[in-house]
Length: 93
Image (cartoon, rainbow, N blue to C red; front, side, top):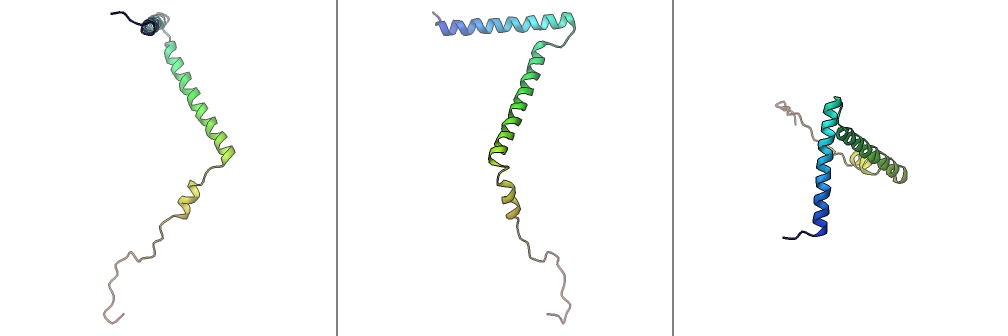
């Protein structure tokens, strides 16, 4: 079986990633510090949250907060029925 160049490239990249992962673990264990991959995951998480917050702020600045809040307030159910069960006195009606 002969693998194509894309398959070989993917295998080489996966192998290099695997080696870097183990090298990071060994260095972290030796220096007794937090692994770099954990710090990079935290950085990626922070960047994602910050990007979404700025994207939302830009959307609100351009289009306003939206109409959903107003529609919820306007469309509240109107209850006019008496919910208490009171017995009528015998002569009242």
